Length: 188
Length: 201
Image (tube, rainbow over all chains, first blue to last red; front, side, top):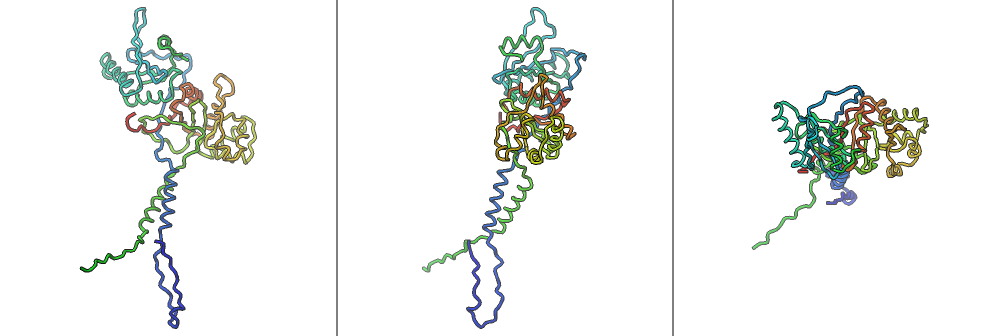
């Protein structure tokens, strides 16, 4: 490997005409290869390969106080309250609240068998109750106990289940305060 | 029987091809490399199925640490300087040329704007490791510096897009504060940075 081109002394052959020596054109590339790979290793480690992805969020513009929005039928919606300990509390608000209204409240996790099942079930229910083109409206209400991961997960579920109508709201509904009381979590 | 002579082979291999490959790869890595920015706080981002890659330029990055501290960084050095000009004016702080240069090279920072000159006077290594207290956020009517910073940055660069990078365990409250601030500025569109989902999660 490590060869050295030792110049033969021309004087040895004495009287013969001093001929220009034919030098070998081969260079030992080992060191160069070493250097090359060293630099490759450095750049490989210093580089950020997988670029992070982003999720686009569009929030509605803040409206002035006096603009009243047309109310949405509660039977087309599902409420998801993001609580602590990675749990989602979900319920469907009744269209009209009277004395003997009962509310079904349940908690699920963020997995494919948890909140995704609920969303898919509600999509189906809304289709059966209204028309096939009626979209489910998801109301996402994060409670103070929820983490950032939870909101990303739930927005991701919206993409996965192809829910295009959803909103991130504050839990200001009277029903929400009742629910928060039941599950023992603060609203603000 | 005569002995079979094993011919002695030279151990020298022709390295030319290997060298070519090495440098080809090297060139590739040099050209594609984008150095990892210095991180002020360790942020473990959540994963999602989102597929949109983050835009290359005109980004205002807002980092939220697990304990709710807010940091910001602009990707372009000229925008950073333009922002500093506006801060000089609004907060009547004078930055020396050395401080300006230091700010130009600061990827991410989060502190009271009045502490900024002092921070920029430190040498580069101290600055990289110094603990930063996070942006001053006061949503109850006091001095809301994050709001100013977003406003000035957007004035410095009209095409600025806002990307939020928060830790998995960041409280929703902290995230909400930042969003509220953005909405005050009529920024209703922003990007949340997530990593691609790997395997089953």
